[in-house]
Image (tube, rainbow, N blue to C red; front, side, top):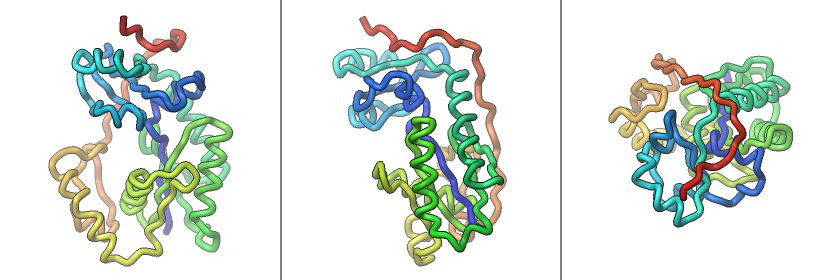
Length: 229
């Protein structure tokens, strides 16, 4: 079996950029419910030292000083963009499993005769052209390893080649790169709420995770950055 995990880069921020191209290249963050803390950051915002979950009152002055575009979260918009992306995925494979609002597993079993890296790049290009969201793709013989490959693709992100496939790399390399990830996740930072053991990362055996519910809001006002005056 072969799986791909595709997800949107800085998804909430990328959704905001789709409808305001002037934000391209500008640091952007999206805040949590009630504008409490940063829950999405572009690469430019990360470079300023803005951390995930950082309370907005602590970074308000920095955002004003550096010209950061700050948005309240709009889950109606993000949910719609997520639906559009998954419709594109289904043109490439009929078996799509929605993992979270910005992540989906694609079952590529039966596609092994193709160059999967090229296929993934075609997928990314189509999503970018039709929906406007930049993505990364990880490919592996299990969902666990596809997730790991996706993480590597993000770490070495290049706009035209943001894909990574574990099939052609030695098992020793997989073990080496999985150790720090397993260690961090054991500390409780696993996004899905489960614990990724090193053995699971290496063997790719099924992993039971706890799925959290995504908050939904009906706020659908006109999208404008928050005034920092």
